[in-house]
Image (tube, rainbow, N blue to C red):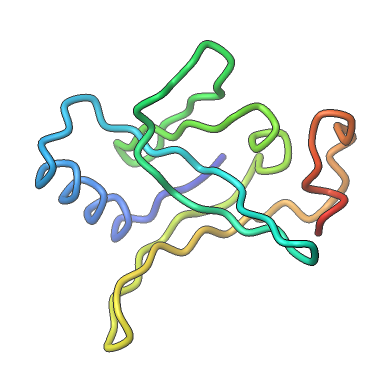
Amino acid sequence: MIEITDRAAAELKSLFDKEEIEQPAIRIYITESSADVHYGLALADDINEFDVITENNGIKIVMAPKVAAGFPDGSIDFKADSAGKTFIIQNAFTGNCDSCEECYICDAE
């Protein structure tokens, strides 16, 4: 399960309200380099029948099947300090997902 902390949920809900998004959802996606895998967040305005959809703390989370296979457990937090504001996405999964034909996350970590 992916946990969205109270801070992150409050910030996301505030952003949704500010932008007047009627059916809000976030998409977790992968941005990878040759040495590491990083995750990003975006508005999920292009949900399709193959996406994996879950919900936590009142926020709908959408992931492509390849992302969901390598990210079964983790958290999304929010931090604001003098350096700025950011969402922190942490994948608690560090093992082998046994889905490497469908998922390239294990090879990149």
